[in-house]
Image 1 (cartoon, rainbow, N blue to C red):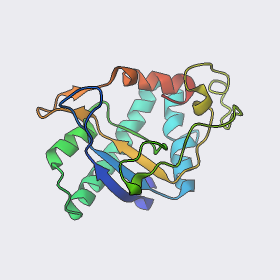
Image 2: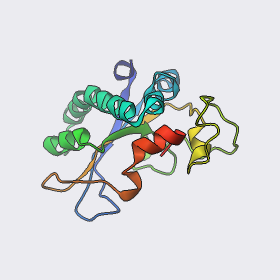
Image 3: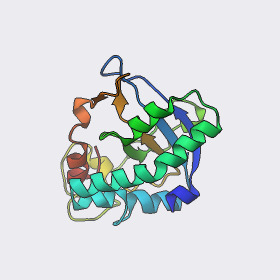
Length: 183
């Protein structure tokens, strides 16, 4: 459903702040907030897969990126972006590529201004027996069910030889989401 209802807003290739010589492709998407709520927050959605297990979450992440990749690359080609299609394809299919909601403070252009920011209260929106009681880092975020209309597809950081770099704080992302709903 997401791939049918989404609109690609923009594409960027920012450099990595943690390692010189590495960059990644990022696509920003918009879809109806009801669609993104089902995709991101539902029991059988993206984070619901991570709740089952880190492995199930990674499998869901891979499946959505494989579904979106040809649509994203076609959009970039249609809009005549100066984007290396080989690099972009490799960035999207490398192991640390991911999908996430567009958070505020992480804009690269006017089209990709984020809608979601830190919650101002501790009241859980998600009651699943784990995330609402955890004291893991970012627990206040993980127990919330963001209602947004923007999503971001992050490729992996690659260098010119397509070697992948994963920042240390993201190496255990799947386990963090499994434990507390957020990374």
